[in-house]
Image (cartoon, rainbow, N blue to C red; front, side):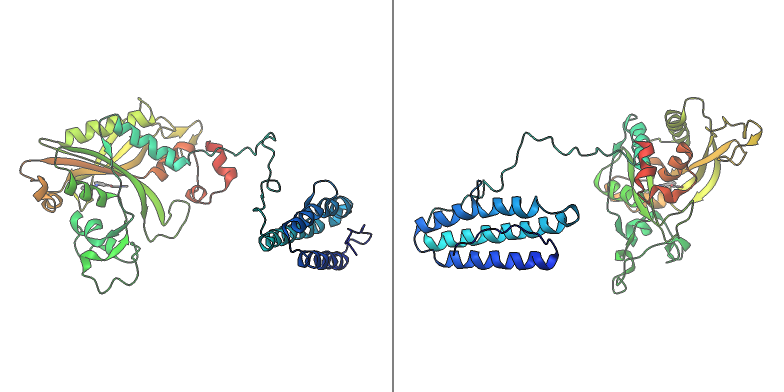
Length: 373
Ligand code: 2NL
C-alpha cells in the first residue's frame, strides 16, 4: 500500500515521532524496491515533486497546520525528515545508476529578497586616540613600526639599560611566560611592559638617521581598577640623528600637544628618571578641560586636580648605554644623539572623553562603545 501523508490532529512530540516513524518506514520500503533508473525517477518525483510530493504535503499538512506553540518543534522535525528523504533519494540514485541528483532545486535562494543589513563597526575610543597621536607624528615625517607583544628579557629590559635587580623585572610588575627557567636570562620570554623593545629592534634594522613612532599593546601585572589594567596601550617615539638636542625634544612635543589638544595648550617639563634616557623628564600640558585655571565655575577642576596641569608623557635623551647595544649598526654615541618619549593613549582617551573608569574601555559593552562611533 502506497504511503500518504496523514493529517495530524495531535501535534505533541510523541505523536510527531510516531508519524515520522511511519513515514521513514515507507521511505525505506519504497527505496528498497528500486532497481532501474526509471524506478528511481518515479520514486524521486513522488517524494520531491513541488506539486503534491510527500515533502510538499509535509509542509502543508504538518507544518502549516501546526498550532503556533508547536510550530518550532514541528518545523525542526519536518526539516530533519526532509534531509533524510533527500539522502535516501541520493542513495537510491547511486544504486540505480542514474544521473547525479541536482541539489540546486532544493537549495534555491531567492536573490530578489532584501539582504540582511550588517551593522558597520566603529573605531574603539582608545584605538582612535592612538591613531590621532600616530598621525600627528606621521605628519612630521615619522614612520610607524610594530613588533611582537611576547618579547625576550633582552629587548624588554637588558638592551634598555635596566639593571639585573631593577624592580620592574619582578613578577610583581611583569607578566612572564611560564616554563622559561632553563633558558639563559636574556632569552626568557615575557609580555612586553612597554613598546621600547620595538625601538631597539628597529635600530638593529635601520641605520641612523631615524624618526619612528610605535603604537601597541603592552602588559603589566596590575590588578584592574578605575585607572589600571593588566593590558593597556602605549605610543612611543624616537628620533636619532647627528646633533639632536633637548631643544628638539621640547619643540617636537610642544607641537604634538598643540596638534592633539588645541593650539592654546602650554607644555611644561620637569626632571624625572628612566633607565633608558638621560636626562629624563615628565611633560605636563596645561589642562585642556579648565584651560589651566584649575577651576570650573565654582568648583575645582577634577581632571587636573585643581593644579591646571596634566602629566601626559615621559621623555628624555637616549642614554648612551642604550646606543651601546646597537652601535654596530651606526649608533655611535660620539656621533649621534636622540630623544625618545612614551605616552599612554588609554589615559589620554579617559581625559579626552571625560570617562572616569578605565575598565569601561575593556568590557566591550556595545552601549558604552556606541557613544564614540
Ligand atoms: C612613559 C615613559 C618613555 C622612552 C619611553 C625610549 C626608548 C628607547 C630609548 C630611550 Cl629605545 N627611550 N623610550 C623614553 C622615555 C620615556 O616612556 O611614561 N610612558 C608612558
